[in-house]
Length: 141
Image (cartoon, rainbow, N blue to C red):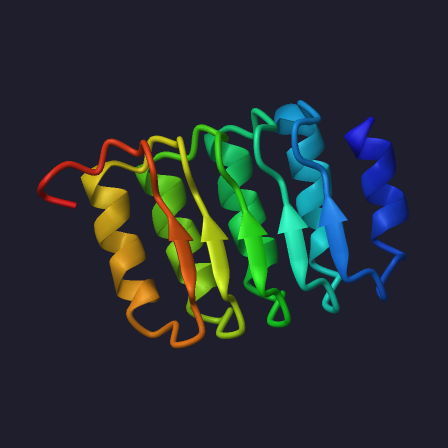
């Protein structure tokens, strides 16, 4: 599964696109993948949508993402990312200045997560597409 693939991916340092969307990698696979992603510094496109990643693993992924400064496209939609994970992701986003597309649709970011993301997004001058559809942001977010 995703854990076995993560071992291989960590040695694929020249990979520029990784699409693992709709693979139900789950928490265990996401944790293993987070370790591999930190060595994939040439990656420009990462699709991890619809993978049942979960809150704890989303935070682990956020840690790995902070070292991915060449990333231009990030899809994390439909992964049950909540306010705390959005805050962790906001910390990673501040170092991802080349990001042009960020998809966080259909998560559970809420007003607190939206506020945390807003701080990071304000410095992202290259961002051209932002999808926060269905995140229960409300008027406070």
